[in-house]
Image 1 (cartoon, rainbow, N blue to C red):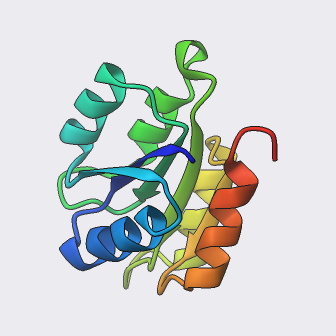
Image 2 (image 1 turned 45 degrees about the horizontal axis):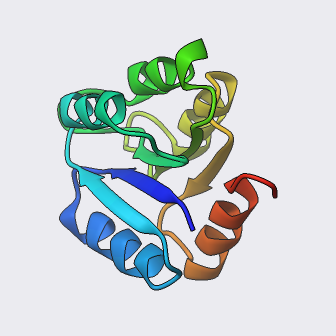
Length: 125
């Protein structure tokens, strides 16, 4: 079981991930913005952060850098995105990997792949 921070401005994605991960015994905390995610992350300990790269208020690349600071070495990052008309999905996922994401998944999310990826990111896996 892990404490997981889900950062996405789409309520459908947050709800989907919350239900999927909670059904596996994980504790899920949701954030709708970069600012809220950073506040939550600094105030608590999360084993995994699942973050949409293209947030309405900010791109998540800055959040990736903040999470990967030396004082937060225990947090693992799963970056997700569907991309946009100007920024293709694979391009964004490659950048997320270069900036320290431990795993990436394209949207739409597949339940089995999402759970398998989360399981690989758990400590001791």
